[in-house]
Length: 307
Picture 1 (cartoon, helix red, strand yellow):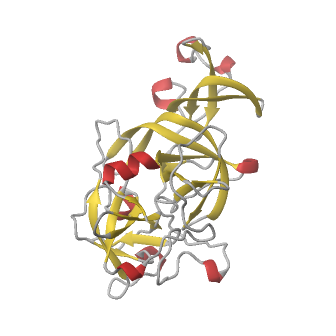
Picture 2: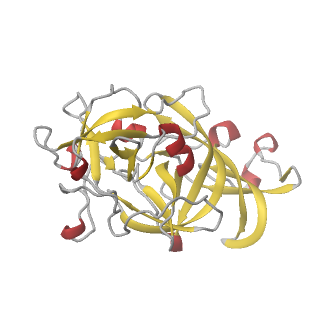
């Protein structure tokens, strides 16, 4: 494994504003937060590699995240839920939180992500998820079939098509990006409903706020609860099409040191507790930090509303 460089250009994964954490304790102090792959002891850093102590009058807080990445599906398929809530089985009607995916032309590579929410416009109902879950990072054309469950989870391309790719927000290698999202029109409205597994139907929208308690249900890790630590962080993630920059993103930490999301949870809708108001669309992160788009940006980019 290649060692992590202390050079800020290579080590810093994101920059945002949030609460300063000192020795694992919340301080109530606003800070400029630098998210890094590896936090080096200051004594081990050359002066030219040290981050500033203050920026614009705010203290600087350095937080280790590991490497951010899109939460693409894992190679194996562990599941911890009871079979009655297994999100990787075929569900009719399908519900947000379950497995969906496209048919990769390479038969050796099967995929699956998460059906985030049911959305609609004036005429149709759609599955909402990420671009990289439904459109292969923008490489699939409109009309491409979408399956539930995804083919990685045993979906059958001959019988399990549920929707067709309709609209994708392009990913810009030059950046900045604000959303990773796409929609797929249901073949029939009766094939899905808007009730997120274990959570229920979203109850409108809310702005993400620091220290807001949120939850999600994802195809890989099921139901988890977390806390928003930042609502305005710029991050870099490695996609197949290149390293992409996303501006003004939400950062979430799992409660009590637990992970909030895992590979395959991409596309999950994040909702506030206990209101069930939608705040974000999960698309990536690391083992400790989860990244989400602001849901208002997602819906505006696709010109749809929550069903």
